[in-house]
Amino acid sequence: MTAAGPDVLIVGAGPTGLVTALGLAQRGIRCEIVDADRGIATGSRALGISRRTLQILDTLGVSAACLEKGVPWVGSRSYYRDQEVFYLELPEEPDEAFPAMLNLAQEDVVRILLEQIDKTVPDLVGIRWNTRLESLQVTADQVQVQLDTLDGPTKMTAPWLVACDGARSTVRERLGIRLEGESWNTRYVIVDVRLHSDHPAERRAWFDPPSNPGSTVLMHRQPDDVWRLDYQVDDEEVDADNLVSHVVTRVREHLDHIGETGPMEVVWTSTYRARALSAPTYRHGRALLSGDAAHLIPIFGIRGLNSAVEDANNLSWKIAAVIHDRASDALLDTYSTERRAAAHTNLALTTRATLLMSPPTRGYELLRRALLGLVAEGHDEFCPLLNPRQTGTVGHPDSVLHTPSGSSEVGPGIGDVYPDARVCTAEGERGYLSSHLGRRTTLVVFADVPMPMDVPFDVEVVTITQKTRSHLENRSGQVLVDAGNTYTRWKVQPGDVVLVRPDGHIAGAWRYPDATAVAAGIARLQRKEAP
Amino acid sequence: MNMTPDQLDSVYITLCETADSAGEADESEFLTRLVLLLALDVGDPEVIRRRINEARMPVAARRTG
Image (tube, rainbow over the protein chains, first blue to last red):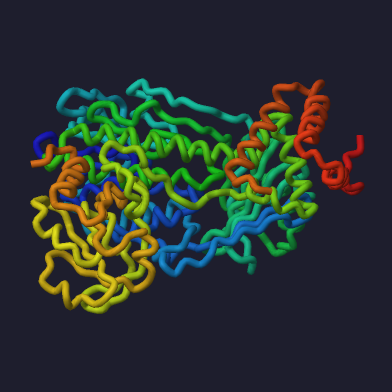
């Protein structure tokens, strides 16, 4: 295996590992994935796929399969005791290619990713099930692992290792890395039931409902008439032996209370305690931590799987650039700093959601009771405190890879993900910008700036014009015509140039720049000296 | 209400934390002192009376025992 070994060894064949592998393979990198399980881990895990995750999955060619199977939703409804107190509906966004939220079981995401690997890059990605990582040594030029397989122990070496082995990561443990942060004692039961219901797909939260006094209950629609419920339980109330009977009673009571009297069947149960933890750094030489192996994000913000996919999307282009010798390995330090900062923000947001779901102390309990009572009596001024804030992605405003915008406010925020928009191709085909960006380093040129043709760098150029393409016929790169609000959404005017990273984040923006300024911005992004 | 959602959130969390640090025995006194101080800031007896009325627990929601 060593002679023709992989460029990158990935530990864990969950969503994080598979998105990493596809991202690397698209850039010609050979990966080997090892996983201790026999095959796809079944049972309910992550559920909500964000718009940002769908954009990333689109760059891997699997967004259509996810949309076909998943259930989109836009509404969020909160109840206090027996009264509805708050309803939030995300506005329709015709300029976005993807819905704000899609409910799709984690095992379906994994199955779709595995099929895509099989179909598109079987020669570049190997997967070994029933293969447990026992130990690893990280040296200056490689990582060596000892694996336990059905045929006995074996060894493998690779220049790089990515740990995508989840909350109880063996890699993290063997490297002696400890997670830091907060844990809460409140226990939740997570349960999937099969139930036929005509209720629309939306997030529903019941605080102190008559069916489960003192508790908080959440309910979400999944594909195929399966519903996810989460509810809070007292510690002494539930143990492994009575979990299922407890669930049957409590869920039945709740369904009766909300008028769902049809038959229901419990298909999966588990218990959960919220933890908000992160490793102090996500890079240890040639080993990198990603997804739950790097950080544990409370489930209530729907940011666990989504931030893991963003980790993978951040990491794969950087590892590929280092392996292809297009960047120094210092680029990988920015993976750790950028994604740790993002995890910090995600943890703050989801911690806030957790404190509302299950007040940990008397003070939080008192304030929440007062808040819900006031909202129930019509004090809508307090509704923002009930907003679950589950949508939206986290940018990297402070990254060293970016060129600060200085005093001129050109373009979207530096470090943010580019805004999607409606465009037409040169052939007149209507579509979205997200079909073109977030794959390679791309200079987006607005209208007719002559400069980028002379930029001596290996980057894509996409020109977006507001008029017709006739006057741009001899220009290099792709020409797109704005078919919606691209200029408004990007906050640009003709003459602006925006540098978009391979992961879709904005690295620089200029107004009527000269080639030197843009070249310096590209060099900064690629961690190279400007020529 | 002219606080932004983030400011409102920050005030809410500060109240949770301070109620906790006051401790169960002194919680009511802390909250009452806070109300008296805020009343000075409001400065309008009519507004304060209206808010007192709104803050009174509806009979149905009162905890018994």
